[in-house]
Image (cartoon, rainbow, N blue to C red; front, side, top):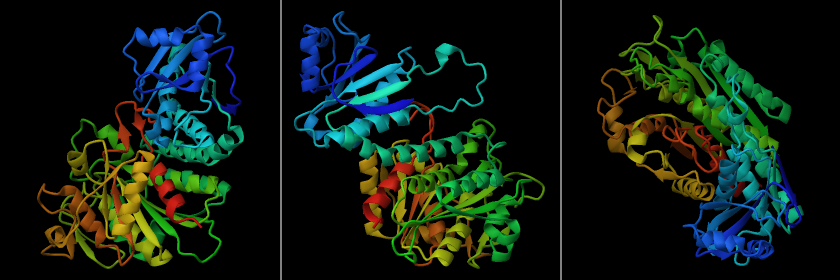
Length: 498
């Protein structure tokens, strides 16, 4: 689909979208169009339950004196309270309403809106960004789609009096959408297509954008003593990989990087502690944390971010082979700490243990954040509304929460503490990988990871309930969400770029 910006003018074809504030308050552009249409918009609102609340849409056939085929009234809610996320949702909702309608061309008649708290160019860019996010589809394996099952829209235009500013603002957002889509693609792929070696190949493609990519194979990891990561992967015919990506965009070459670490379990059967069969097909997305890391690195390189960033992915496949680790086995991690494996389905924390230690030991990051579909318990606690945030630094936690609010990728801070930490002490090793209780499962996973954080400012994002959606949202079609790319890109732009 082509996304563009143009000067304000009433289109003579396609669909026209105009904004309406709460209590049916027409924006200037909508009021002008209503006059041209002989009051048709006002009459349509009066005959409906549409009153301009945010996310409401009312579609009407365009009057005969307009060249367009239909007009959509888009609810803006309280105009003085509009946020960039709300504008993104507007764009996404328009795509959702029209992409299966047969319409090929839509124009959002934005114009000037009094009291709008977002600059006109930025507002236009955010609408287009949200629309682009909603266009995502993963259809590459669907070979028999009928024409009416395919999207019809070809052109999305925002009509604004700030065209140059809109184009400038949309540039980095377009690169951000590229990163989100790359993440969604990786997470959507089945386990026979994305496995540790092929995931590494996908990351290596970022070299075209200037990202330095290094892949550690099992021999190199063994030499480094990564017994936890290697232990998880030893039951699979697909050998594990540690993927290291570096973007060097800071003015000072030796500036400490921001490090992002991702869990990359490309398929999770649970290992010997085998998961139930129903729903196991969903475990192709147990590598969503790694998908976010790779998509974020694509975003940062695409928009030439002014910082040093390191992305590290711990990739393995967790399978119930005769060579797989068993409950009761003891692994020695890169840190030298030993781990009693009481449940082989608590494997994400094992691969991250070595990845976190390696990252801080080698790169000495200014801050280190990991993302993982770590626990089902976080979904029990928070549902599919917010991801769990654990942090050893209050300032970092506050920055992340603010970034979540600004991007619509919400976070809720969860507790750490000695009382939880003691629950993973083992009688036969330095620690065990589960507590033996169902209580506080998400926190138990986090305090396990914290034992491999050696003084770094660190946050852990448990995204297990946010990585995949079973229903459409305004800017996120059902399936892989790409949750975390927008959040971390905002965090970096706001706090860590020069």
